[in-house]
Length: 597
Image (cartoon, rainbow, N blue to C red; front, side):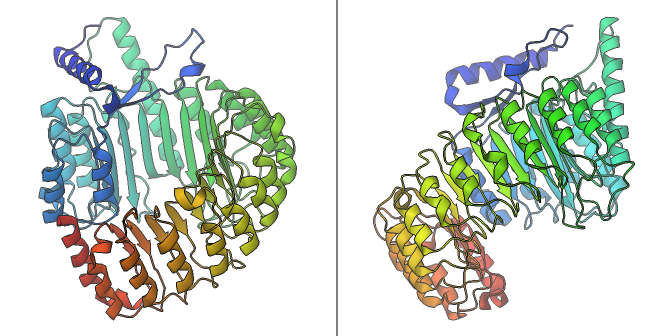
């Protein structure tokens, strides 16, 4: 198979650039450690060129909604960006067209409610002209003209001949999910990662089978010597993420039988009613996943947003079969498995020896027993999230504290977590993120955390109703590591929080750049004045994100404090439910001026 000259030149240019500045390239290998069997070829790497200064542009344009003038100012200051994330709620087509060019490799457009579908064609035209490889993410709101949307999306795909990753999220379409059923014939063969939401289950199955059939056709044509273009169908999809109406047995079978190189699978559903038993996910379907020999990341989530539903046909045996068939898993996220007990969850922890990330949501039968022998588990856990698991207590926190590699611990919604576990957790020398939202933590527990050695950068105490201003002071004045490393703090929905806590944060936690005090009724204008004055001190970082939702103690007059130099770095503010809400135009104008400053 002869490589097209344009593709050869593009590859040569990219290789030269990476050799010239290797730090500017982030390289992700999917399933590398599992590719030892000989029947299938090794999946190629997904390479994303990402200059370091593009990280700044992402934060500037994602955390607030720029207008056209502000965006142009940002782009002029950071020319030649290869990766960009933009909140488009206040932008028109011309603003996005100005972003396009030969340098752009990754484009994430959020909240595109003010843009027309012609932007899609413009992106495709840019890719075709410059022959660039793209990572593209689109977040749309509703579809006024599905036919026009489909036509322009086809133009985008026909132009992006070297598209590597595509993510399309359409909001506000819960009852009309058939936007992507036409998509398969137009996906370029270079694509390795695909995320679509939302879809009907039946449309997803047809889509996957069409991908398989076209791949087989392309493979046969290649063996017969038939030439093909870069726009030919997919050869090897490695990452698939779908949000659908229901995860069923026939969907799993279609994926397993059609995508042999799959390394990452992410499925989420949110049934409006309890699914029929005959079509719901079963333990046999989990066993089928063992056929995906390169699978390293698995996420199966059943959301309770629309209805209190769960996977009722999967029990411990299903988890046993999954853990035995997919021992190479490095990341597991499961939610809504109401029939699985400690034995099933423990099987994953003890069988998947490379497991680094483990997340369980809404598991009513998960208790401390699943983590009783966690020290004997061979997996090097880095991230553990146990969300809304009512039987989890402080014993689990103590057991997990024995993991020397743990960096992220999320126990949000586990209401039986108490002070007893914080003494052990505070000694985790690698821990950078801790969520204790809704836990039964008191001021004494925060004192233990404040004296610990954990270099926690992100801490959430949201809804910890037994902690107060005194606890925040003990946390930050305890002479432990957290007072120096903390950059994000959430103390929202805590009735014991007042201006005293904000004063402590301003005077002691100089590294905090994200602060949430939402629905703290005793926080007043004095807190804002303290933040405005203390943030001018040497060594204190500027606030970038401030959430004061439903803080009714703020007056309208205090809104003028946002003009102070101390808030010049503020990029996002949540002020709904406050007296500021009636002055929304003033807030937007103030932020726009800051962005241009």
